[in-house]
Length: 252
Ligand code: GEK
Image (cartoon, rainbow, N blue to C red; front, side, top):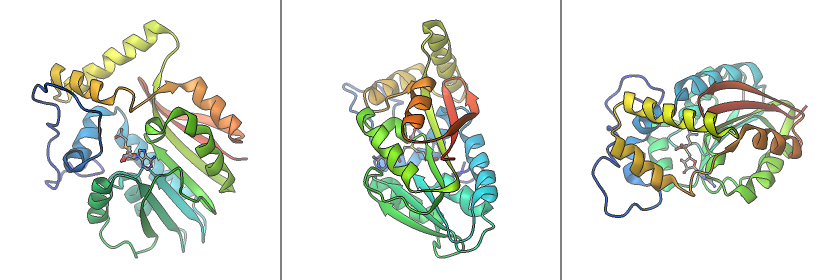
């Protein structure tokens, strides 16, 4: 499957956690992960392909002439590709940022020519340091969950301050639920989803331990409250499947 979930042979099947490991190191976006990432995320995140399609449709509607679109934590550039494919406005620049060199290298290969319209600027840097300006669309598609909790409000405030009046932020995240029964049910169903897509119980358990303290999910209410604190005036859940949610937030 390729980056947008269509048939292709360019990426391998994810077997990163398929054999028993003596000790499980913290999850890293390294060359092994970059090589299998499209397969990994498609089989791990319910609704991932839908969020990408919706981001493209939103880009088509919201991007205006001479503006910027940001894909923060772009990985292999799936959201960037969707934005690029759907953008109709002239002179739009997409700025795609990731701090994992292995991911960005694959991203550059998949994007090919970045000087077509809209142009794409690839930046290998921490999104906490990326200047945001003249933004009509900002995408954090399953990225904020990897940023330390203390840094999330300053990051969202910076993003909000760089956004144009008629713009939107897409924030997709894995979430927790305050009700323990709901939380446990959704976690179990998510594991069932992974098994349905060919992951073994061992793979699921080892990946879960690798992500401990690296992917830190929060509740939907925490995200909504933080968005309000960062200065966003409105936010709506525009997609949810189990413990995976995508929020669209507006500065006005
Ligand atoms: C997609 N959005 O396919 N600065 C820059 N990049 C970061 C940072 C940071 N502080 N923290 C994490 N990343 C993509 C999927 S994956 C989600 C996003 C997942 C990057 C990290 O290197 C990785 O590429 C990405 O955020 C998270 O639509 O794997 O669940």
